[in-house]
Image (cartoon, one colour):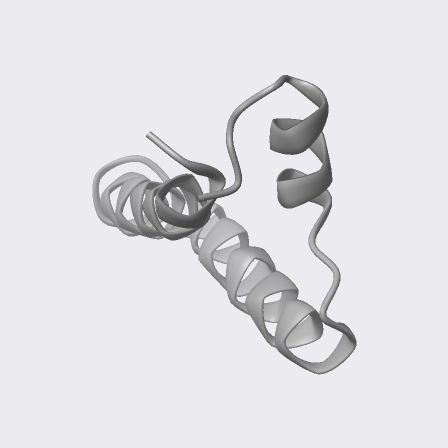
Length: 63
């Protein structure tokens, strides 16, 4: 699996998990979904993503 696919997979899982936790555990978990969304917006404008840097340093191929 490449960085390209992991960068789509991780936020999707985090948002779905946040929504589930927000419904069944505590509404404060919905802040995690908001945080992930804000990070996606930030990376769209700045072209920088911390997760991408971490994955590349771990040796996962870019393509």
